Length: 149
Image 1 (cartoon, one colour):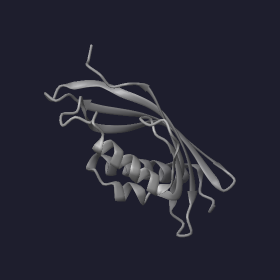
Image 2: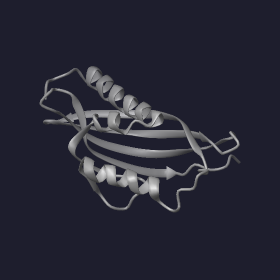
Image 3: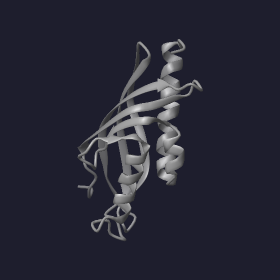
């Protein structure tokens, strides 16, 4: 991996994650996938099985869209995704990133719900084009979203 200063590497990882979450809020899976390694593995917070590769990720997305439990009126809508406490360290040819993700949202009436909080870990590596991509992502929801107290 090309050596970057710790601050530059941290900024690079933060830009990638922020852009990926912006892609998510825009509903742009192709843009998200461009930030992932082809052979990515993901422990998704809402699925039990390990997702391996972009084809399995696409299948997971399709299953969510066609799920009988997916109602036409979701319990809440995500409005903002905020990265906090991002830690970045380079270990050989990979980068390990850890962070908390706050997911803010509103209920169907537009009232803010208490945020979802998850802790996340990603392993990143540079592709042949030198772009940093996520090779593994692990999401762990610690506080689900819900009505405000």
